[in-house]
Length: 98
Length: 493
Image 1: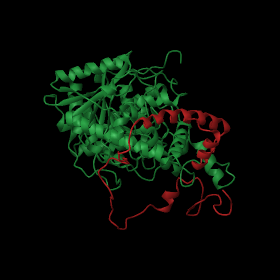
Image 2: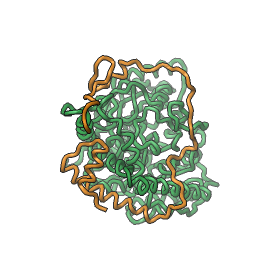
Image 3: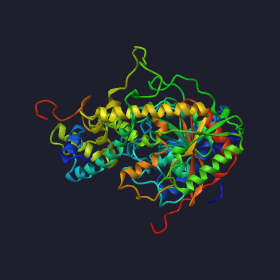
Image 4: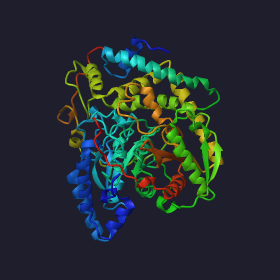
C-alpha cells in the first residue's frame, strides 16, 4: 500500500514532528515499503488468538501510600532549556488556534 | 591478533590479581584509561570518558579491599551504554535531543554495580535512542568494529560490544529491545546476554519500547556474564515490571557437563539469507554440544518469519508514546526558532531527532492512529501471542534452543543505511526472544572471513541458569573467546 504525502503530513502533525518537503517524500516512500512488508501478518489467521501486551505475570502492582522525600526544585530545573523562578518557561499555551 | 595484556584479562583473572594484591584497582583503572586513549581514535566506542570519577571510585574500591571486603566486581572497571542514567554525568542516548542532559538520579543497575564496587570508566556510543543495528544512527559519530574498522560493530549497543572486544573495559552494560545486546556481541566476538523480561530493574534506563526493553551485560566469558548478572538482577520497587522472583548465584550453576540437557534446533533459523560461514560455524557448535553430552532435538517455531513484522509494529507504537516526552520543556533540546507553542514542538522534534527515530515515531503513530489500530497494533499483539505459545511448546521438548545470533557477520559501514528494511533484517533471529520475554545469550563460535560469528542460546523465562550452563560448557570446549582483535585504521580510510 502506498501512503500519500497528505497522510504523511497528517501523521507528522499527530507526532509533532515538523518535516521538510524532502523528508515527507523520503518517509512516504520508506514507510510505504515497511507497511507493505508488515502486511504479511495478514497471512495469519488470528481470529481466536488473544492479544499479548506484555509478558510478565504481574498485574496491578501497588506501592505503599506513604510520603517520601522528593527532588528539590533546583535539581528538577537543572536541565530545563528555559525557566523563570521555580517554573519551566514555555510559549503561551492559551489564546491561539492549533 | 596481539599478545594478551592486562586489559585483555577476564573479570575472573582480574579478581585473582586484585585479591592477591598484585594489582590495585587504581593501577588497573589507569591501564584501561591508557588503552582507551590508544584505540579511541580508531574505534570511538566511548561518548564520555569519566577519568576523574573512575580514579576516585578506584581509590574507594582499593580502601574497601584493604578493609577486607570481597566481591566479584570490587575494583573492576566497567562502562555503560549511554542510555543508563548516571547522576550528574552526561547521558545522551546517542541523540542530539539529550546532548548535555545530566540525570538527577542513578539507574538501579548502575547503583547496584557501584554498591558492588565496580568502577565507571565512561558512557558508550549507541544508535540514537537504541534504534538501529549498526550504531551508525548515533548523533555523535559511528563506532568501528575492532576486528575490522571498515565494518560496523552491530547495534544498538555497538559501543558496549566494541569496548569489551578491544580491551577498553572489563565489562559493560547494554540494553536489548530486539537484539541490541546479542547482535553486537555476535559481530564483535564477545559474550552478550539479554536476561528474562523483568529480571533486571529498568529504573533509570531511558525507555525505548517498554514491553520489550531489558538491560544486559557484555563480557569476555560466560563466567563473567554470570557474575555481572548476579549483581544487577533482582526485584526493584522503583520498576513495577521487575519480577519479585529469587535470584540465584548464576556463577554456581556453571558446569562443563551437558549430559541430560536437551538442546532444540529450530529449522526456521537455518534458512536462505543466513551466510554460509555463519551456518557452518553454528552447525559445528551444535555438534560440539552433542559431543559434550547434550541431546540434540528438532523443534519448530513456525511464526519466526513473522516476528520482524510484529516487532516493527509493536516497538514503534511504544516508541511513539515513550518519545512524546521530548517536547523541549523540562529537559533536552529546544529550538530557538519557534513562533508559538506548536511550532516550537514541531521544530524541536524535527531538529532534535535523527532520521531513524523520526521513521519509527511516524510508523508507530500511524499504527496507533484512528482506523489502523486494530489492523496493525492489535494484529501484531495477537501474532506476539502465537510466537510466545510456540516457544512454550518448544520448551516442552528441550531445555535450551540454539540458533545463529545474526544471519551475517559484521557488514561494511554505510552498506545498509539507505535501506531501512535491510538494516532491520539484522535482528531477524534476536527479535523473537524479546517478543516472548525469554532470556538469550550470544557466545563466540567461530569466524567467517576473519569476522566473529555468534551462537545464540535461548531458554525458558527466568532460566538464565540453564542458558548460562550450556553456554559455559560450550565455551570451555573451545578457544574462540580467547581471541583478541588489534584495532587499526581501515586501509584507504
